[in-house]
Each structure stands twice: as C-alpha cells, then as structure tokens.
Amino acid sequence: MTISKKRLAALSDYLSKKTGIPAENITVIAMGEDWDGLTKAVRASYDGSDREEVLNILQDKTLSSTAKEDALKKLDNGRTWQSLINNQMKDLRRIEVQCLNMTPKAPEIPEITEAEVDVLEEELEVEEENIQIEATDIQVETIELPEIPEQAVEITYIKPVLALSTNLLYDAVTAFNIGVEMPIGRHWTVDADAIFNKMSWPGERKTSLVGGDLGASYYFGLDCPPLSGWFITGGIGGGKYDLVGNKYERDGYAYYFNMGGGYSFVLGPDSSNWRLRLGAKIGPVHTDFRLLEKNPEGTFSYKGDKSLTWQVPTNLQVSLIYLFQKTVTTQNVH
Image (cartoon, rainbow, N blue to C red; front, side):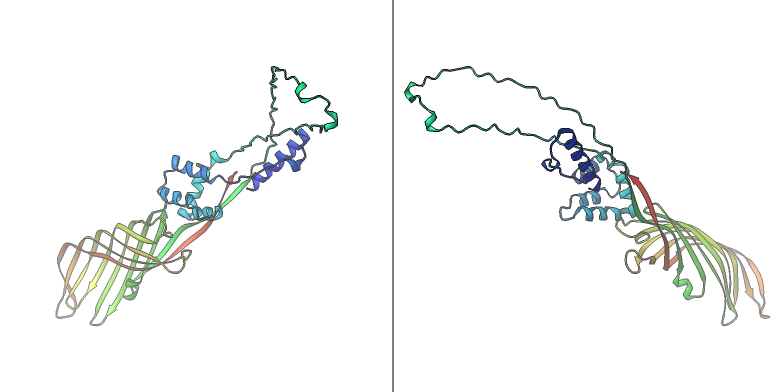
C-alpha cells in the first residue's frame, strides 16, 4: 500500500504538470495488495502440501489483510510465505493505471426575455435541416510514469536447528544416555542415541552396557510446532554388555532393528523449546555371548558360546527434549 500511494502521488503530480489540471481535481485511489489475484495464482500454480490451508486463509472474509499475512507467515515456519513471494506473487507486482475522464463544461445559454421576441408564434416557419455532427479524433498522449525504486522486504521466521534429549526411564536406573536429533525439512528428522551403564548391585551382581542406535522419524502434523505431534520412527542399533548374576555371567554383543511411534508434547506455548516425547519401538534382536558359570570357589568358568534371536520391545521412551532454534531473516525485492 505504501508503494501504491507513492506511485499515485508521482502520477498525479505528473498529470497536473503535463495537462495543467489542478492536482486537487485529479482523483486517485490506492489499491494496495491484490489478495484476489493471489488467491487465483495459488489455485493455478501452488502445489505445496499445505495448499488447502493456504486457500482457506486467503478466502476467509473475516480476516483482515494483516491477519491473513500473519497466518500465512506461520505456515511451515515461514517457508510457505517465502514460496508465495518468490512464485505466486511475482506476477502480481505490477502497475495498473485507469484512464481519467474529463467532461468539458457546457456552454452558457443566454436568457431570452419576452421583450426580445417580436415574432408571432403562428408566423414562425420551421425548416427542416440536416444536422451534421463532425467527429473529432481524440489523440491520447502516451505518458511515461516515473520509475519507483524497488524496495527490499524482510521476512523473519524461526528455524529448528538441533535437539538434545535424555530418556528419563534410563535415567531412573542410572544409565547415562544422550540423544541428538536433527530436522531435515518440515516432517523428517535423523537421530542418534548413546547409552552407558556400569553398576554394582547387592549379591555381587553387576551390569555393564555400552550401546547406541541410529534412526529417522517422520512427524505428521502440519500445524504443529517442529518436533511435536504424532510420529513414526525406525532405526538400527547395538552394543556390548556384561551381565554378572548370582550363578551366571553373560558377556557379549547385541544387534537390533526396530520400528515404532508415539507422540511428542510441547511443554508450554508453541514457541517453547522444550518437548516431552512418549514412544516405543519393537523389533528383532540378535545376540552372541559367552556364558560363564560360577563355581563353588566363587569364580566363573567358561561354559561355551551362545546365540539368541527374539522379538522384544527394544526401546521405551519418556524423553525430555530441548530444541535449539534460530531466527532467520531473508530479503525479497518488491
């Protein structure tokens, strides 16, 4: 709207100087943003996953122009608004000028008094004449509008960068663990988790575990903040363990493939960096280990190598997550 008003002021000033018409006699109307044109452009060429949501916002007659713009900027962390500016809005950046009509003032007709009429009505003779109207060609001069400099518009949105997590269930059994999750696009993330545990228990029992896994997750929500809502996940992992019990010791390696899902909550307002994720994974686990048995002297003797494969829950999640985000500002020329 600001640019539109500047163009109108330049045009009104130019026409006034060129034609001699007082500026106050020239009517100008600033049209500003072309929301109807944007709606048509979205229908014709926008194919984003949130197309229907964009159209619903554009066609909502209860929203002001500012409210529509704010709602569009929130979609997909600002990437939808960026796409609309770069693609659909580019053909709407134009100058339209409507012609101004000038009506000449009608000539004044002198008033005739009765004293000036000295011819009797019946003596008047009416003579038919052919009235010829001369057509006049109107020459329209082409007007070159003064050039309005382009202006850069800044667009700011929040971009998720990296998330750190810890599984509270592992923490409860004093197993140190940490997870890293990185967003890839709007829906996908890749993640890596590591776990370490070395504990002694009553009865000379001991546990030792070093492991980790790699995976990927897909978040379904379009309107949800990043890393929130329903998700599915899958990955591979493994580790080394040493389990010492009252009678046996098992020392070996385990490998697994798993799939699962869950729900991630935003702790606080939508802009919060904290998440609480609940989930579970299940899959086949294979392990190779050495079996040792405790003899009467209290030492362990080697009994052989064993292998097992079974289907079990490989991961239960009650994870506390902190998401690092940054503010991104881009510029577009209008």
